[in-house]
View 1 (cartoon, helix red, strand yellow):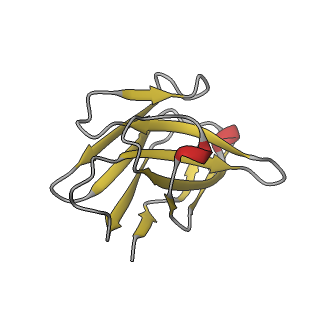
View 2: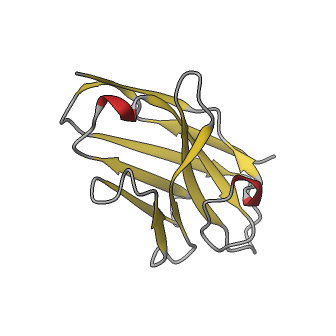
Length: 125
């Protein structure tokens, strides 16, 4: 059974930082999977934030977070991270991590096979 468990969310003031983690278990060991972060603000659709390939050398970011967020992964720990700096109130959302067995990092939700339950990030002004 595949499980993705996010952690690290919370309340932070604008300009502050948070580091989200997503621990994966049960993923097929023989597959090279990509990981992504998405977010959903109240009353809005879920949006792509960042994605990373298996090796960690291939990353993609939404324009809204480029230069502020960094995605990384530690395959030995089956964990992906999202370092969020210079946070803005508009970054407030539930953040979800997802795993794609396709292996190529993508911003397409439909390419992701497994999802976590999400962690709340709230940025106060």
